[in-house]
Image (cartoon, rainbow, N blue to C red):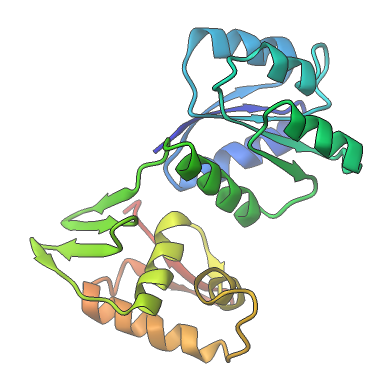
Length: 218
């Protein structure tokens, strides 16, 4: 997974971002000022920097200008004005996320940038199972496990957001598309198929009154 620098001055938000990113397997360093962010970036190579614009000291826009040109950056900020977004993207940022945001939105956009910049692992290994997200192939115990396109899309949503509880509605949005108008019951049916085909009856957990989670921590 990726090594990510979080530059955010609000401790609660910084810690929450780090906790969610670590849950899905990323390694995170945390900075709370622009100067700290630049110092860490000078000491270590990061696959991605999540950069608040309104940092004390050196602000996020100035920090971006001092980072290497090829350093992928996502601005994360309450500054929602079009001029601010245009400025951030004009400085070469990969994305611009406006606060407040959902944790899953952050994870999805981080994953998109990491894939686009070829800094994300596209092969997920768990016990004796390998999921190749690019080839859309699954192997377990040395043999191929055939999945339908929809089953694989659901598995990918669980893998990318592993260890996080996902509602049925969120899984519909991630795996079927936001314009899907079917019943949430279809998620339950496909989850049962994945459990059976992949032998993940214990690992794909039902989260009471929420939905499902792929648990890879036990």
